[in-house]
Length: 288
Image 1: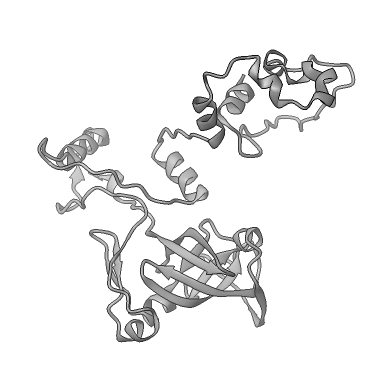
Image 2: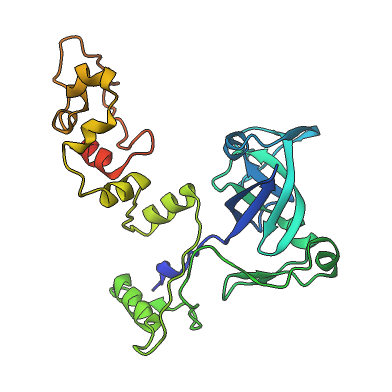
């Protein structure tokens, strides 16, 4: 006998967090972490990106992972503190600065301090504590998880006889989740961090599609003739008009004898992936 392995792993509980600093509002995401013994943590890259103010801890802190080893990013030496909101729940939040997968992680002390009511069936948070009513802006609304989930399955995890493929149980499980034809449909759009998106896409083998402002502008100005673009170039650059040619830009430069080579270690293969954000056209050209 074996178990339905597809049901032995769940999703992360990630909520939207709004940060207010120097008159600016930043919308990001926070992981609800029931295994974190610190009140809250923030990713060091996120701190640097938005130039958040920090202060030194009197005593550095060491973080341990689940098997007892200290984290590879080293001891925590700095703290960030700013006003943050989870839904309509607002507070001044201190955060340990370390290396994270998500921008922010909220730990057990934070959950205990606010006595957060968590509904795992619907993945929602609510703040009913008297402390929150007096110090956190009198929150009234529940906070939904960032990613929409199908309703939970109430039946127990089943044992599958050997010889029966797990794919069959997965198909049956999805069939039970299929809503009736007359059920109202809605589109749930949420913010999600780049790291979380990459993780979910890889884990669930999803296909993602993006659209950039450049592509939007390109679609809007699609009727522009080929002669119009020349009017956008200052006259002092007309001697180099060929450099702005679309036909020339679509070609790679020919290989030269003096091209730089990157020697590889014997038996090693470089990873496949872009080094920086690219548009769809750039990715297609890179793939070729």
